[in-house]
Amino acid sequence: MLLHLDGIRSDIVATSRIRSHVLSSGQDNGTTIAFAHGNMSAATYFEELMLGMPAQFHCLAPDLRGYGDTQDLPIDATRGARDTADDLMALFEALDIKSAHLVGWSAGAGMMMQFALDYPATVASLTLIAPVSPYGFGGSTDLQGTPIASDFAGSGGGTVGSDTVEQIRLGDPHSNSPQAPRHLLRNYFVNPPFRHDREELLVRATLKQKLGDQRYPGDCLPSPHWPHVAPGKWGPINAVSPKYFNTSAIVDLPDKPPILWIRGDADVIISDNSLFDHATLSPSTHRPQPMVGQMREVLDRYEQSGGYVEEVVMDGIGHSPFLEDKNLFLSKFSQFLQTISPTSE
Image (cartoon, rainbow, N blue to C red):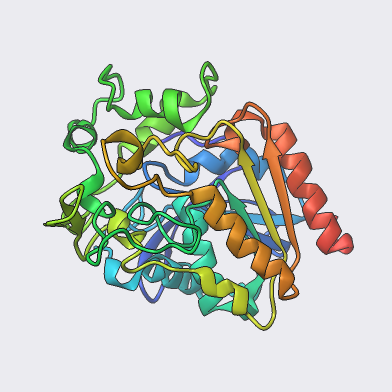
């Protein structure tokens, strides 16, 4: 069992869909802020951020389906991010939460965008931390998310290295493998030489990720198109394949929640030249997916159609702004909440 910081409550909440492990802090009757983590992580990554929020907020962070101590159920990738979005709505219903500020990180930001599409009346605001592109991860090459192949080759579960999966399967938090969670956290999730004080607990939380063809990373299909692997139908990496995932329709929401887009300028995971995009890593005639450019194009249209968007770029910061400079992140996030709802502070 992981040790949690003082002030963080840990509960299992039975919902209509799944038994969710949920971390929470602050006043139960306060304004809710819900946090969603990304791949190879868990709710515990948000603990310091949650405790940094003013006490009048009710902060909650579930381990998403397939992660941490939440009930182990398969992820139907053909629904895109809807399995996890529906899980979050079921959690809100179980806790009688009518409205919340949503904060999503990486793939979790994609889920929060899907939640905003499916449950718009519940969304007070949307904060996207180093978010996956509205057109998913991998397999596209222009600002409009046009796929590089008809079968969406270059995206999905088959793009994850087998060594990475094996390191999670071995479950050794002290492994020195370049594919081990500790190495990935130190060298890709944050901008080196940053080291987090709770690194040991973060690594152990990552190792709770569930594996298999219906879990992480998911199944895959052979493809005649470069890089010769296409998405299957299960698991979290297939769930953000552009074959199934596209949240660009947030532009068309009639009632648009305010959006904060916050990222680091040294992010090598979500980037226009991502080190995890096969088009960056391998010889190819295809350009790397312009992930940041795709997000900007969608959010520009969001603004042009009446939405409010604030972009914050943190200097020298990698994929995890709230871990690498918590105080600056909290300052920017609090300013955003104050701007959109002055009475919330």
